[in-house]
Length: 200
Image 1 (spheres, rainbow, N blue to C red):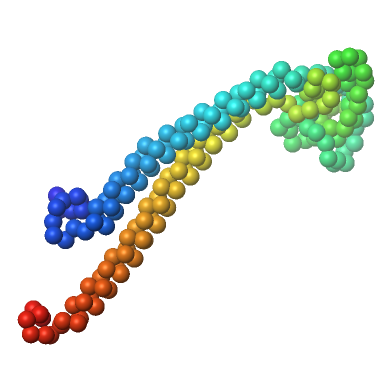
Image 2 (tube, helix red, strand yellow):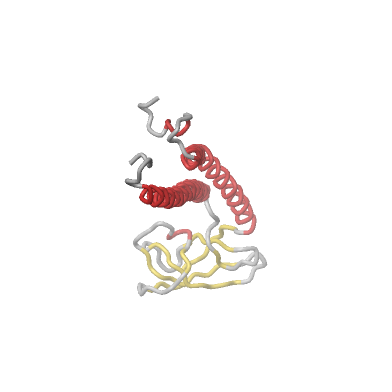
C-alpha cells in the first residue's frame, strides 16, 4: 500500500483531511475523463463531422458536373483564377481563357489555371454547377476522412486538456486552502507556545 503514491488518501488515518479525499476523487475522475471520456468525445465528434461531410460530398456530386472546355487563349502571366480539374495538383501551370457550353447550350468563357502543356484548342476538364457556371471540384473521400479524423483528435485533445486544467485549478485551490488552515493552526499554536501545561 505504501508503494503506491497517493493511495494513503483512500485509507482512514489521523492525518487524512477532507481535502485529501476530494483531491483523490478529482484525480480519479480526471484519469477517467482522459482515458475514456476524451476518446469517446473524439469518436462522437469525428463521426458527426464525417457524416456531415459525406452529405456534403453527395450534395456536391449531385450539383456539380464535370464537363470539357476548350482553350481559347493562353497567358504565362499569373492571374487570380479558379483552378481547373486539369491543373489540380500540378506545378507547371499557366493562365488561360477557356470556353464551354452550359446544359442549355449557352457558350461561356472564363479565366483559369491549366497545365502548361495545354495550348490553344486543347480540351481541358472543368467543373460546373447546374446553371453551367464554373465551380470547384466536389470534395473527395480522402479529404472528408482527413477532416473528420482531425476534428475527432481536436475534440479529444481539447476534452483531455480541459479535464487536466480543471484538475490543476482544483489542486491549486485545495493547496491555498491548506496553506490558510496551516497558517491558522500555527497562529493558534504560537499563542500557547512555551506556556505551562501547553505541552511545548
